[in-house]
Length: 101
Image (cartoon, rainbow, N blue to C red; front, side, top):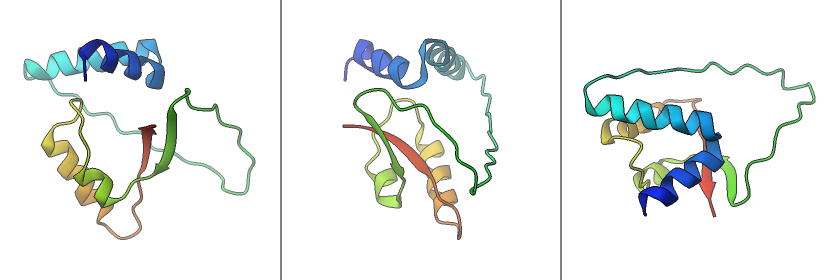
């Protein structure tokens, strides 16, 4: 996949400013600067919550270990993919993925 198409898809998925942040983060990693950000998400499951729809061509689904085995991403290192595999194999852990059609 071409770099321009990848940046365009990332911009559509995350928004321009977040995509720019991801690009600068990846550049920093090339020079040995790493920063990990964890987000804690809490929601009352009985409450009604409206969500913004994903951009055209994207959909959300629960991740499986098979999805991680077939993942092809230049944004994630093999170590990060292995960390996701380890988390998903723990009892009670689930992951959500955003896919392109």
